[in-house]
Amino acid sequence: MIESTYKSSATKSEKENAEAQMAPKADKILALFLTFIAMVLSGGRQYWESHGGIPEAIGGGIGGLLMSLIPVGLCQIRSKFRNEKSRYKIFLWSVSIVCTLSVVGFLQLFMLTNKA
Image 1: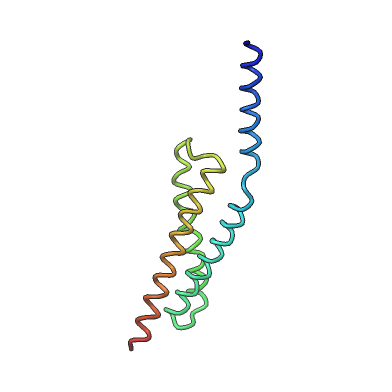
Image 2: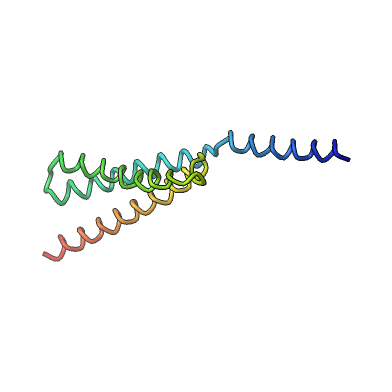
């Protein structure tokens, strides 16, 4: 009885370790894709607002990336969020918010330039 309990708990922990080691590749690809989109949208918006300023566009792109990384860094303070899975979740949420805000800013800028 004791041996079977030990065996079942060992298989559960082995399964959990295997799942933790196999970080979903789809999440990694989605994170890279959304990061690229956020950087392009943020940089493009800055480029459009500055009427063709390349340094402003580069700064806007880097700003989009940094604004996605700041919540991940802040959440690393608590030990609950120090594993790879929670890091990806936090990063995906923050980069998706940056993308959404960049799209809204782009649309707002587009609407303002078409009015004039």
